[in-house]
Image (tube, rainbow, N blue to C red):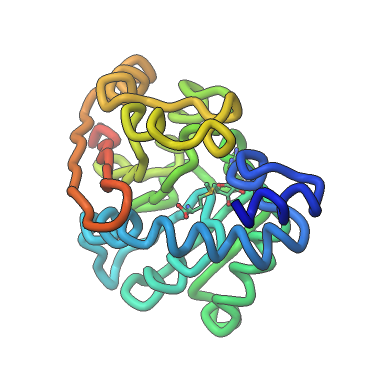
Length: 218
Ligand SMILES: C[S@@+](CC[C@H](N)C(=O)[O-])C[C@H]1O[C@@H](n2cnc3c(N)ncnc32)[C@H](O)[C@@H]1O
């Protein structure tokens, strides 16, 4: 495949770039590849969020940052964190005006240590990041910490049975895939048993799955 040669030339691999897009290849190639490949998943999950003009939203692992620009058109405020400096720069450039207006805040941070107070957000969105969480149960609790009581996490993902059909040079041991049941158990064991998983069959793209996890109201 043409991208294998490009990745070898850049001294990297597709799985490393999907986990953390870096360098010129992350900024110019991988961020566009992610936007195209995950457009339906993002559209499906963000549609499930029923965003309103009063919402304060966080996105974790935003890639290019275009989804932040989309959500900022509706809601009061959007914050985003990503541990890739190149993706932070990309998101800053997609959201330049909204950042200047104080409507968007982009930070370079990791899912395991979110730089926000408890109960800061009505809704949190993350897509295609759970495969890379370093300490899944602790990271699930860290995300739920920043959600207001009664608020929700919307987690876009491709389940294990889909991931296992993808080429091994793309989906390798960097990824931890989850079945819907495994995802349910992860959040239930972490103390968040209120989880629903919705899915949509896609035409010409991988099917979309969105787990919706509620932080208990008290
Ligand atoms: C596969 S890409 C998904 C990007 C976008 N959400 C999408 O679905 O197209 C994973 C993104 O999450 C970020 N990421 C992965 N692990 C992370 C972590 N532990 N903390 C913060 N960001 C992380 C990566 O830098 C990358 O931007």
